[in-house]
Length: 167
Image (cartoon, rainbow, N blue to C red; front, side, top):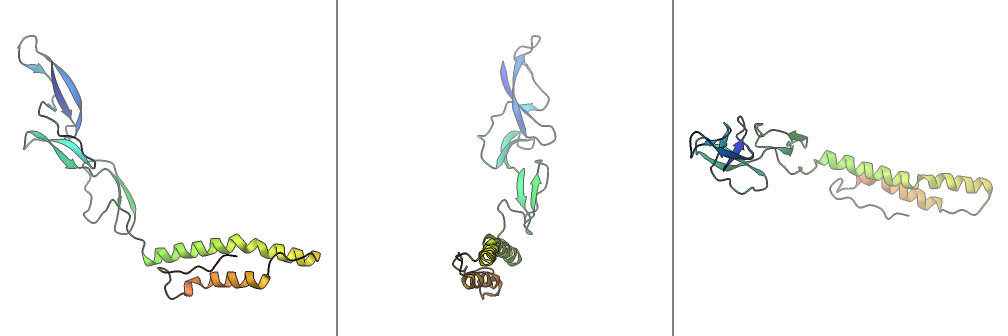
């Protein structure tokens, strides 16, 4: 019995081992799959796959393009095959957000902070109608929401934002 390493015919990627039996008619000759080799396998490494090189007549480690990649525009693309070409400008790490993307994110955060306190206006109006003690200082609430509304007007917007103290 002898171990052969089976590889994919088109990608040459190592697939699995195969225990070949010796031919009963020809001692020393083993019956093995077509796409296989008894050459040693290199140890696996992250981000690489083991492939059989016909030119070298050996297994080698090759960069594995499979997985998720980011285009320069920040679009996430999935590569499923070792045969797919990955443009050189693509990266495994997400690119830094553009100024426009940062501005959108800051505005979303600002809107969420305003929404988180807006209910207090309704409570204040109800308390006034009922003539019960007021929970909030409405002028302070107005000032806080106005400060939030003016966040995009800050000189460092959107990279350097100073959020008003929450109330």
